[in-house]
Length: 544
Ligand code: F6P
Image (cartoon, rainbow, N blue to C red; front, side, top):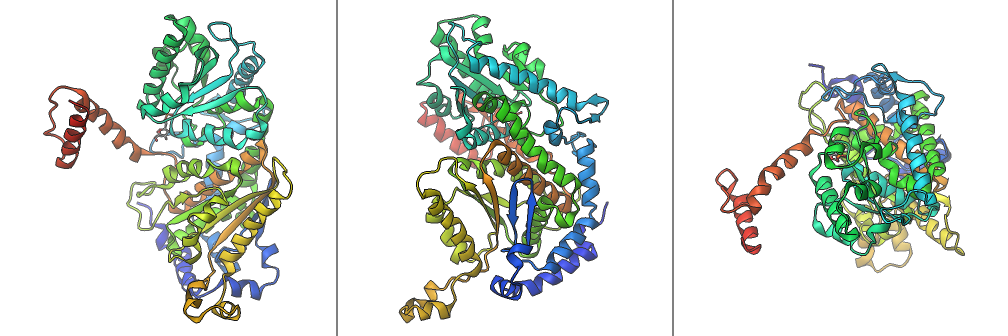
């Protein structure tokens, strides 16, 4: 059993240092160092990252870096990129970084030429996307495909829908996409009721091809399609269904021709799978060239993470900051606030990436952790969030580190609107950091009984991430940035960010309970009294 990271000198030094930092205000830190705002910044590919408004000093960063060295972060990064089986509980390599390697790179893992495999699938996806986009691929009745319905859940949904929304300005092939994920029948009803089956293509995405939600929705889609086309045969399915999966047998059993399947590999975790064939819907919408730009953006950040010393390694530093707040300053949540309407699904996407990865309570060797892990990630696009929950960040009692993400150039430049928008971005991070003192509020002539209410404590940490423009490449860069932040925090916590056993129990129980909702006089004696009573009520309201 390895000794806990909390017993190391480096951890203890950070603990001591945190006591001092608790009494330090960002106002003092900025006053003491006029260049702080330029110094505590980093560049990674096109992303400029300003971490100067965090509750850190140079000493904090030195101590955090020492902690990273103590847990051999650099070796762990090298092990991931080399394809070692770092997902130990599933005995798998973790190689989402290989999905964005250029064609001339070389990487062989477990005897397989990974780069050749990746590009073979990418080329098939591109050829297929071009056929659909050009109208060469036609539906069963000979009509052109105009709508793609992506059916999947978790990593097989959140990545594609987030990227499709983010890259709205790059959609150029006359294909629009919809995304069905929830097994709530209203989801597939809502997304299909106004579609013409003759012009609709379903992309069924499931790594395992055994996920209840996805199979139920795909079966319903099949029924909808065949009845809408008044067809019965497999030929109609072949023209309107393609699959993305690692499991060819299950795809065939479902009735989709393996010729119409795009594969990926067990070394791609669901929440890291967007740059695999899982991104097919996005490629159909924005075209193969934009899709390759997305992959190139990811790769630029991968290379930075793989080769840059921790002191200047932006994802590593941000991952260490998250550890700082979680373990030494007792933060529990982390806000992600994109100042980009097109990134409106980015916080939801990050929730799976961060929380399914680092929501763990045993270390790699199975010992219960003696420190906190996994922050709760949440957020909404600015400025909407400002008029909803920012009040609590400004004047509430909990510490919420926040990432502000923005782009200097808009995708649509309408008068001075983008400048007004960005003035909010700059104002919020400054207000959160520096607040408004009692003296300032009094000097404004505020009524004495209101002064305390108008004092803004400030000292709320933020990181500003600015890119020149939201493009496929900068989107890929942002995603890779967060992937490696998650990796870094997970490495310090000595947990496995690449399994998700916790999600399994609920799936198993749902399958066990399903027959009790529909069958005649089901036996509920093996169900707890609360759940049994709720099921009885549900059955009665369903007239059973
Ligand atoms: O939520 C659990 C999970 O296994 C995720 O990790 C995954 O992204 C999702 O279910 C969907 O799985 P699949 O792609 O196999 O249908």
